[in-house]
Length: 176
Ligand code: SF4
Ligand code: SF4
Image 1 (cartoon, helix red, strand yellow):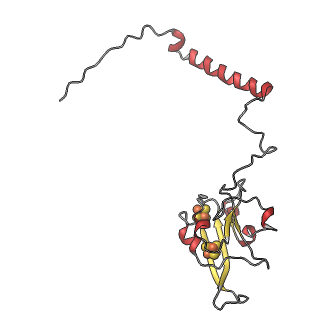
Image 2 (cartoon, protein in one colour):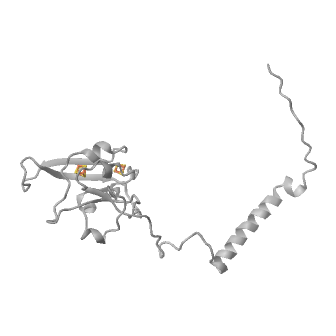
């Protein structure tokens, strides 16, 4: 077995304030008090914001709550191809397809059911990347609170694009 040399370092006597942790506690409280007084009276270079009254402007690439985009006639762009469901690593998208009787092309599909479980979603954006129709994009809506698990499972009506796309708080989208 290899011999390991050890060196004793004499740090001198430890003061009693250090021994009972009084010194570090007082110094820590001093830092807290300094920040508290600066936040109350100074307001300079304060990193926090007064949410929810003040909202931070996030990047247009933020991955927030999803939007199912619509065509000019208001119908969903989604053709129920299951690409997003397949790409989803959290397995939180559920799609049931049906034939679209109004489609100009025979056998074109549309989603009869499209659900995302937002509590399982990891907001990775893979569904957005996988979609060949730009039918699912992400918004900057990140304030989500649910009192029951079932409320976190959102369907077509909750996800559908509301109004002109410019009015949405747009987040991560393909080719953007
Ligand atoms: S953002 Fe990621 S985890 Fe969430 S639904 Fe899309 S692919 Fe699934
Ligand atoms: S959202 Fe896009 S990828 Fe998902 S099923 Fe619809 S068309 Fe396919």
